[in-house]
Length: 564
Image (cartoon, rainbow, N blue to C red; front, side, top):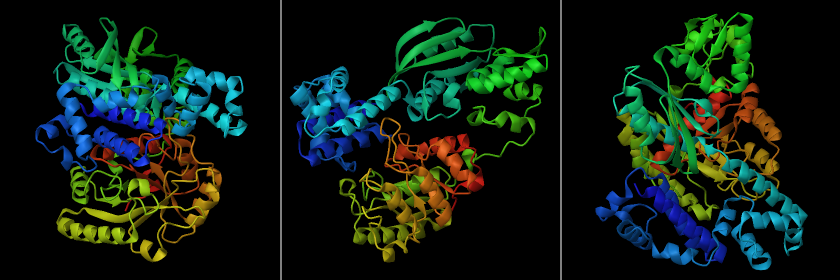
């Protein structure tokens, strides 16, 4: 599909226009188009062929013409025009979250900065700090932003890694040659970012040609850009992802060693070192090929066997970080952590009433297909104008629409919850009056502006509101580079304990906020966690898996999360 290609083009047009100082509404139109195309599950080419591009919410006639031009010719004149006079390295600087378009333009015009290396030079020699409107504090923030950007560039988001792995695994399964196959490494442990992607596969027929055919099919899979190596039992390729190219390694494993290999390549390193130490004390040796007593293999076909030989209960992959899980497994006291099947609904979804792309009916249909019992509609409130935040009157109309839709859905045992993602304003008050909030089923309060202006105090004040149930994305961080609010998260967690409010684990791939460590702290204090995808399109609902993965890494149990 051309969806992703077009999304990248529109994002780059928006970047270029932003740097040039174009009007905000033009920039936002291209940003919105990019996000819509990126999250769409339908093939945009098929929609264009049917002449229905303008039926997509958020796609106007101008954007539709540009999509049609690209689909027909492989080029887009507006893209060439927008980027013609901008150095490519300048656009890359926009990916540094502490840098805005105005600052980038100023640095370019006054200091000739046209790339990341140029930026580092003017920071080092003091010229950036001397620039008007800058100063040491702002430069230090930019320096931190660069560090975060470079760190994030070395790894891929869990969402991108999951989708790449799933595509390759499905491609190999379709061959009919595969007996068992699974992703390993930090991806299986559901870390928020992933380095290289490891996949283990076991052929149905060992010792024959099936293994060679699996390796060949892997190296020719869709999305493979380069083959780094291809041998009898291993292959490495570079695959295109949303976050750039990423190495994927495939290992062909014998059936009798599959469990040992899966345990070994899942990690973590610290977890595995502890297991090897325990094995040594028992006169055993653990490797990717199995568990051995002398020369005799005594286990290896299944992971459970590997743990059992050490007297351990099987440890869920997300817990394997040497944080006490081995000791609990030895005592048969591992907590029954949240299961992916325990989720009955999504508590943070946006509709096309604000900046989402789905109608209420479409959201309900998706919820039913996913086996959910409920989805909370939490569109933005009136102050968030860039996201078409709802006025009180529009919210009341939406509430009536939800009531009517729920009446038609009643026999199906599914309902939409009337909710809002209400803004926490500069003084800590909320964007809607209490008389309106009390009519809702679910109120999520959030910071969307003034990230360095009394954030802790504003959140604590919002928690005092009797109608607020949850504080959304409490730290405001973005994994791709934004550090987040200037917030004392310990005070926020203490405030949630005092007021009985829940904190959100925002499952959107670029947030995953709260992170696993703050979720763990909240769990220890008995604070409930609300998991919501914050999604704006159909594919976003699938990000619930990411939220559950982080919850499992924090050892959250079913009773630790809000279920309505």
